[in-house]
Length: 317
Ligand code: AHR
Image (cartoon, rainbow, N blue to C red):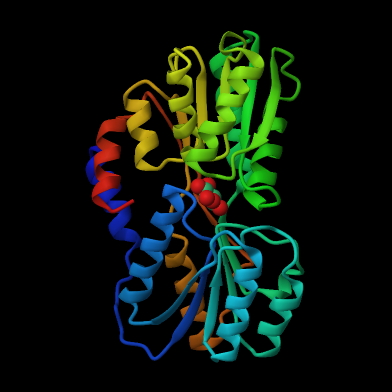
C-alpha cells in the first residue's frame, strides 16, 4: 500500500459506520482558531457530529477561558445531552464542571487535559502530550549525534496542558545530553504570527549563527519562525534544524522543501472516538476509560512529505 492509500484507508476507518438520525443535541466549546490544526479539528468535529445526525451547538471562545465557562453555562441552561470542550488552559474548571455534573450532563475533554478531579468529566480524548515532547527531543538527540547545539524553544499558550507537557517531555529527552542546551524559551501562543515575532527576537538576541535548532510546540509557530529565519538570511532546516508538533499540511510541505526537519502527528479527529464513547455511555451506561489516547507518529525527511501534504489537503486539513 502506498502512502496515499494508507492515509485514505485510515481516514475512512475513522468515519462512523452508520449515520443514524438522532435526537441528541451536544454543545462544543472550541478554543478558537489559533492554528491550522485547530481549524482542522473544528472541521472534523462538525463532520463527525453531522455524520451521526446529532444537533450541534458550537461556541468559539476566541482563546478566552471566561468565554468557555459562559458557553458551558449556556449549554447547561439549554439542557444539552452532552458537552465537548477543548479547554484553553489547564486550571480553573472545577466549578463549571460541577455544575454540568449536577445537571447530569456528561462532559468530554478534547485534545487538552485539565487539573480537576477526573470524576468531573466522562473521558478525555487526547494524545500523550509529554510523549510528543519526548519524541521531538529524542529526534534532536539522535540528529545531533553528540554535536553541540544551542536550542531555542517556542512554547504554546501559557498555562495550557500541551505547552506544559510538551516542554516537560522535551526537557526529559535532552536531559543528560550535555551537548544540548535550551538557550531561549518563550511563548508564541500557538500562532504563526507570534512564532515569527518571537523567532525574530531570538535571532536578534542570540545571533543566527549561535542558534542550532528550534523546538516549536506546534507547526504553525514553526512555519512563522521559518519566515523569520529566511528573512535573517539563513536556511531553515539546514542552518537551524526545526522540529515541531501537529503534522499539519504546511509542515509536510516545509519538510518536502527541506525547510523543516521533523513533526509529530496529532490527529484532528478527537471527536470520532469521543462520540463513539458517548454513544455507548448513553446507550447502556458503558463507562469509557478516563483517557482515550490518540497516536503520536513522527514524520521526517525520510517520509514522502509531498504526497502526505496532498492527501491531507484533500481531506480538508
Ligand atoms: O491542543 C492541541 C494544540 O492546540 C495543537 O498542537 C495546536 O496547534 C493547537 O493550537
